[in-house]
Image (cartoon, rainbow, N blue to C red; front, side):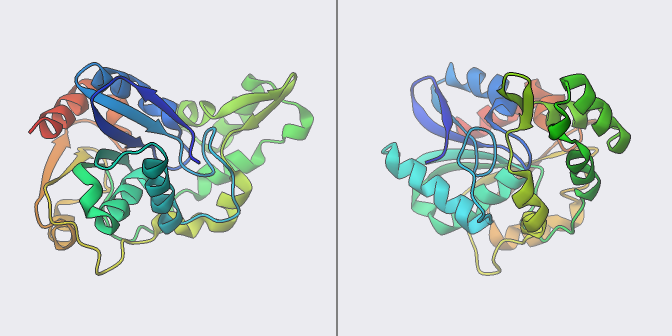
Length: 254
């Protein structure tokens, strides 16, 4: 069963993080929504955070994990916010189990195929030699050799933890990601359709959802609406949490 943090009381709302992330990435927005009429379930997807690790990794399995989580917690109808990998998981979950969805929000990802673009990040992660028992500063110094963007490094460092005294490790399952990286870019199945209102929120500085993608998105989500957070990149919820929260809440409350 997936690990989760549950905040508040009210309508069930699941939040699904992106690749190499974890539930903590959404704590600020999740806690805020938990005070506004929602019971927020911040999930760690398989091979991430405190959830179980598996040699198997795909969107079909992650969508099934979310379904199993809902059944375990007796959640018959839920709203879902999914970011990046979590957004594509949310799309597949909604198209597979539309009767379980109240509201669907997808953050900065489309249903299309995305070519591999995490190779440099994985190279940096693989360069960390935990057998040498590095400090947190040592790990960050290694990552900096590969990953110039400070925000990306800080995002990755959130998954660093003390496995035991003196021994750091990453919470995510790096060895499986090395083998299964192509799974992250897989497109939504051609026949997958969800015909209820869906909100796509993109970052104005991100190229994950381009204007030219709108028609293709509407083939899968015919009632899709689009919002853009200006001057924000792929981590739009972290770069402008106030506007993201407002857009999400306005849609959820409709």
